[in-house]
Image 1: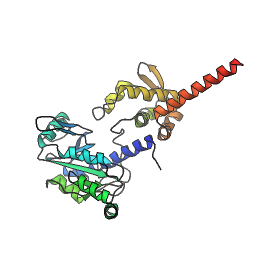
Image 2: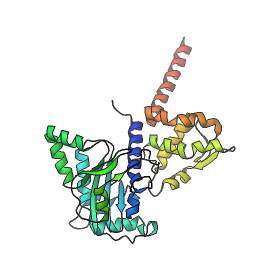
Image 3: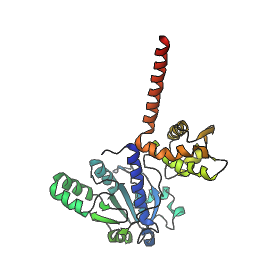
Length: 316
């Protein structure tokens, strides 16, 4: 069964949060107890100096004061060409490039570390993959064997599961530091990880609508005077991890207003009230079934058909 855009986005966010939980107190043992931090998410590691052409965009960076691990998180089990290209780019990141990006991410201010790097590792995590799947598919599919070989030339392949473990399935780390040792040993993950991450890397309107109503809309239940938020306040809330496009927020609030989940009370200022709660609580179900743009396309079509019917009725 094909997932809708909203379902794919929700699954992607859930996958990020499961991986993120490996550094929280809900994991056993948490990577944070081994000094591992997450200083930046969705960074871009670039180096276009002479002889180099690097543009790596991992989802999450792990850093323990010496090793910098560039981690790509996948919700499925299909190793495709894009995955291999992504890990090839991550594998090209040098110590100098990693240190520059950590500096840009203000790692000195966010962590107890100074940003120095002695090793760079590339990791790709497939949530729906396990040892049995790898062995069976490797024995049955030449294409899978080839893809597995190619991706592990550039990265360590891992898996994760709710209430299961974050663990290595294939590939070798380049170095033998404390972080590598912790990842080899594996981390027990919680069944219900906390929602630390609310948006996908692409920040699509569907998951953005869910995040806005989860964070601000549902607060209206506890406030007699409602909850007021501006477009810039929302952008500031998600920065610097996400640089939310103002146009995407405008589209989201057009949608939320249209379904009576909020009201615009000023230029790019919106109010959520208790009377909106029914619509607020229904937002996630709506966007799981239909893209926001498709909602407006369908709404425009219904308006056009209604206008046409009225004109035809009047012509008689």
